[in-house]
Amino acid sequence: MSRAVVPGLPSRYPIGEQLPALYADDDFAQGFTAGLDTVLAPVFATLDNLPAYLDPRVTPTDFLAWLASWVGAVDDPQWPVELRREAVVRAVELHRWRGTKRGLVEALHLALGVHAEVADDGGSWWSGTAGTDLPPEPPAGPLVRVWPGREAGVNVARVHEIVRAMCPVHTVCRVEVLPGPPADEGR
Image 1 (cartoon, rainbow, N blue to C red):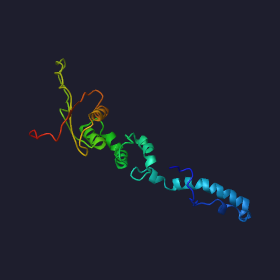
Image 2 (cartoon, rainbow, N blue to C red):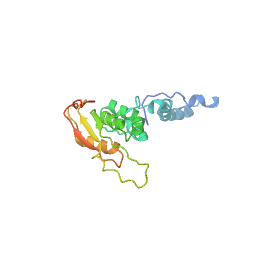
Image 3 (cartoon, rainbow, N blue to C red):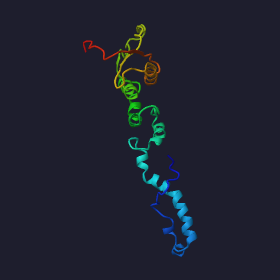
């Protein structure tokens, strides 16, 4: 769809009506401005509806990718339109939670529809005593458990991509794909 020319779209602000009275009956002036009205009508319609273009819930579908680029949202044309809209709506929130358990779980659920949990999320070590021995080696890294949600299966490659993108750079995360929710382990 092109917003450059919309056949039959009337101008809300016809130029011919705004000309001095001298040109009101001039056929050439009225015809010339009518041609300009045809060109400018889509521009005025777009500007009049600008807030709708900036709202991912109602923006035209072809405008969604451009809007997603503004907020750094993932816009996969393969996704259903409603999921693409939701990704743009939630992009700022997900950026705020990036690098956290919550951010990783939310990103996996939004992008792939899977359920996830993060275990063994690391820790810190400090000592108030000078010259203390170095801390022991940390565990292998956080474990991200993923199981199917809205889809029957789990795209393991995409899970790894999202985990790499959402985990802090210095953290190595392990991924485990389960056939269903993990058994309650005494939580």
